Each structure stands twice: as C-alpha cells, then as structure tokens.
Length: 171
Image (cartoon, rainbow, N blue to C red; front, side, top):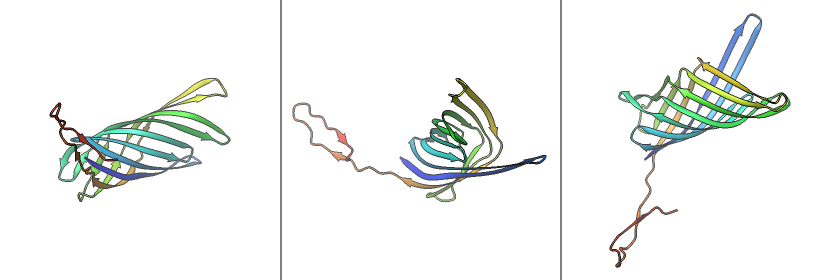
C-alpha cells in the first residue's frame, strides 16, 4: 500500500478589544493506506500548551484529478501544561472540511479549514474533569511526501504432508 510522511503547521492570531491572542501548532504525521481510499495514520501534535499523540482515520473522495475531499476522525491522549501544572488529556477531533491536493504522485498538500474537537482533562486540584467542545475555524496547512511501500515476499517450499504453501514477510 501507499504511505506518506509529512506534517501540518497552524498559526493563528485573534484580537478583541484590548486582548491579543497568538496560537501555534505543529503536527508531524505518518499515514498508511490499508485499503482503497482508507488511510490510517498517527500524528504527534504540539501546541504552545499541549502535547498529544493522535491515531487517525481518513476516507478519500476524489473530486477532480489530484484533488480529494478527506473527512476523518482522530483520537488520542497526551498532556496539557498551564504555568507550573501538568495534566493528562484525552481528545477527539472530527475533520469535516479537509482537502488534499496531489500535484504529483510523490507530493501532497492538505488543507483543513474547520474541525470539531472535544477535549477532556482531569483536574487533580479540584477533583473533577474539565470538558471542552470547540470548533476550529482557523486553518491548517500540511505537506506530505508520498511513497509506495513494497514488501518482498519470500515463498516457502510446499510441505509434502499437507501440500500447501505459505507466504512470509521478512523482518
């Protein structure tokens, strides 16, 4: 199957009244097509206060030559830092407005215009959990290096008793 390695970078700015906010996110990723149009992957997401490992699933719908609509879901765990405190976290992300453009067979660009997320953080100080739902209307831009994975097959000699053969993948 095909595999890809790449990542996404997100930068956001917002201002309201006298408040100014900046956000930054980087997420290297590795993906593998397990079936036609079905991609499994894992990314390591780092933002200014968050670190998460997120396995994901995306489905590819061809729109035109080289352009795909790729909705998907990711879930994972990690931790959140806030000044001097560190807490574990669990998150789910739903990518409903994600596109991938492949100008060549070896290069792909992803664009995520909006995603829906849920984050759960156990709060040890107060003894309860913090839940958050969000809609990210910012955008994420990513680059992928696509590669076809070919594993050579080694054929065993047929057993005389059973007259069968088996295949093995070398390690």
